[in-house]
Image (cartoon, rainbow, N blue to C red):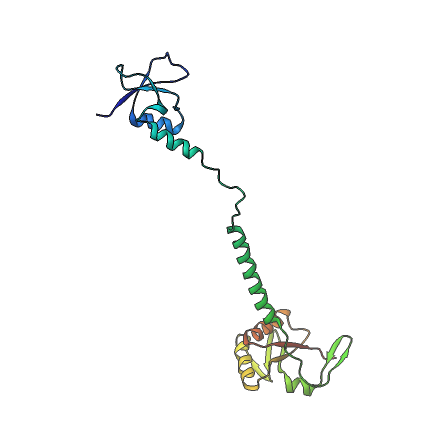
Length: 208
């Protein structure tokens, strides 16, 4: 059978005492409902003692006081987690932008003398033939006809043909000649296929 205790508050010593078990007394001490100054006794045959002086609760009160005397947590301590997160984001950003910059590097221009007119480079037919893969887009009725090195190619097969000529000739530049009536989306199709084939430089041919 658990021990029962008579408890009186130090603020109201004449009030009727509470009857609490040992577990309840300990719980009230930990929550602050009772303090070390409050009075306790086992029964009428024992004198009233302050809880802090009673052998049954003295050790518990000392532990509570030691816990209360612990220094507060240092609020100036830096949390490194946000800094690490930002560093990782920046690292990924620089990796991606560096890779993209490498892909955007232009190939060295083909050797040979070029002239400039109205801010545009002027190349001879020989230079185009010697250093570029030539592709043309012409309107045949309502259909766009693509020619790579004078060979008719379907739009869906452009990338494969670019890879073939790139491997066969070693030329990494592409010259694109498009009739004015050809829709702009055909130019986009050529550029996408050339990029997929690994063409490093694309030159738009504008004949006067």
